[in-house]
Length: 280
Image 1 (cartoon, rainbow, N blue to C red):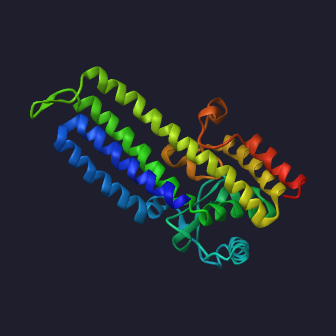
Image 2 (cartoon, rainbow, N blue to C red; image 1 turned 120 degrees about the horizontal axis):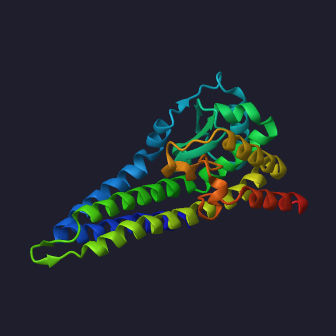
Image 3 (cartoon, helix red, strand yellow; image 1 turned 180 degrees about the horizontal axis):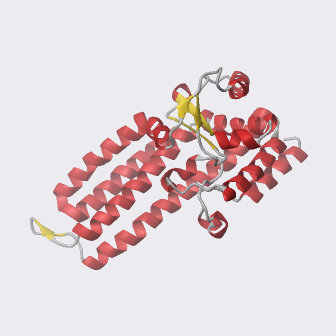
């Protein structure tokens, strides 16, 4: 199913590129932006993991440098019968974690130094189980393509405002008012799509991660600690990739929870507590 979603996202990106390219530059613009879309899809598929790890200054950790993480991840991957991902550590006080990579064979799990300082072993196991579930479910590629779509639409909508509304080869590409509509609505639509994809996958990773570790209450406790930690040390440096993390690193989430890329922590905790009560 995730292969279908990934393919549809790639085609959606190409289609949106072509539509906005057609508006900006007519037929020639449509072909140009089709080519740009192909490049973005290629980069998203092959290099998105390296890009996002570099953005956050994540460093690959040797087992001697992070023995606890290696022990937990190795045990969980053996239990789940999946390849061992690379382990990265980010020097950041913001307590958080994310997984990336195009498939389980080319995956990475990254944690911050902040998360290591506030979680106990069971809570950390719950978090790593959540992230490994993203890898096993191939959510990581979908998340990065969704981010690429949102970023591309925002960029192109701004281009439409500045360059739309003229004629090329006798073709009307729209008025300034239409350009304004594109500039406002296109990024909103992209964000809503990205939000819906991210929320559904977070719930699924909570559930499958709790089943993998057998520690739903520990994951629930970790989520609550991470939420408090992020409120004390938010990170707004890369909002386009905030959806990758187990909890949103952005400030002001309490005011925009309806439009967050993450489900509300209380609802996630409630579901995990229900799993523990029903012995899933």
